[in-house]
Amino acid sequence: MTAQLGEDLMYQGQVLSMQTEPLAPFLDALPEPLEFEDFTTACWRRYIGRWEIIDGRLYLVGIKAHWRDGTPVRLEQLFPGYEQRVFAHWFTGIIRSAQGERLKYVHMGYGSTYERDLLLYFTDGLLFKTETRHNTLPK
Amino acid sequence: MIESIAWPITLQEWVTTYFVVGAIVMTALWSVRASKQKTFANELATIMRPREDEGKSAVRRFLERGLIPALALLFGWLVWPAMLIARVWVAYRKSRHSYPWPPERKFGLGLDVKDMEKMADNLFTKPHDRVILAAERTTCVCVDGIESVNQISDPAGAVPALPFGHLNGAWLHLKKQLSPGRDLWQFSSERVGVLKEFKAFEGYAVFDGDTYVDHMVTGFVWNDATDS
Image 1 (cartoon, each protein chain N blue to C red):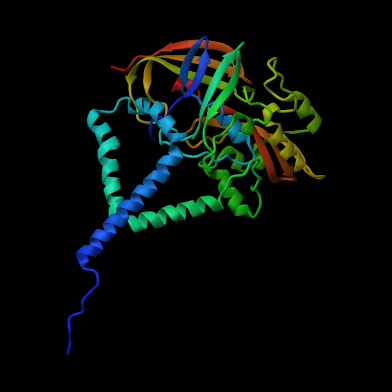
Image 2: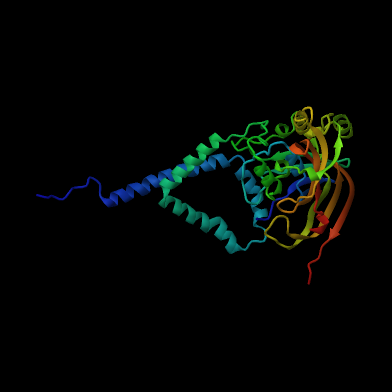
């Protein structure tokens, strides 16, 4: 499996790449799976979401994907009536954003190691804790 | 008296015609592909190529971006009738399998018990397509209680004021299965995802006695990102 492209996260005025897929639980909860157009082996999930944390809440603010017929996916097709911003209340878990220099490249998933990991802890879409982990390579 | 048959076209002319027509066909196929990609995939590819190429050597980049595509194109030109048939077949298949929105639930139709058991145990089956086992039920619950517990609100108004918020559609679908004699259960399933990205998932399921009917997933227990 090729190394995967991250989702984009706007947090504290910066655009970060995150190695977590907060939309997956929503898609997995749908009664019928959605079929997006495949576009690269570096993005097996077939979409790239743009996220934002505002006042400690996680919002999905955009998505880049295409349906199988080639038409672009719009946010309001996934969330009828919400075309600008969607509160990700379904997400409980930890968002990881790799930062700094890359220490080790792994050609699979989100396996590469970077200098630091910013960890953001969420319950039901609400941020309750942040943490920075400093990584080193084993000698 | 046998006279040599004068073929109207020589072998050399056949070969020339084959490759000239092949070049035209391959150009047409390439153009169709490029026109479909120009809006989305190309845009993404341009953005992502540097990220994809991180950590790759110059030789590997040359192989992936130059040599292999060139060889593939050359091979395609040699067997262009097969390429043309394959492209027509793919277009036909795509036209037969459109994906309407909202999608209609197909699960549960035409599946026998063995199929369902297979799906329940298959690692590659997504959680929403798995079958919840009777042993994974935890608590029998009532609709009103569940709807009041799962009211979602957001000061920015980015969620509908409905039970389960953006997942209300999935909830309504599940509720439809609750005909008389059936029960709503909370469940917790300790079955992992295909990449072990989660170690359990939970939600609500409808059962007819001990027979599974349908379910919705409301949460996952992720493998801790701090372990990765």
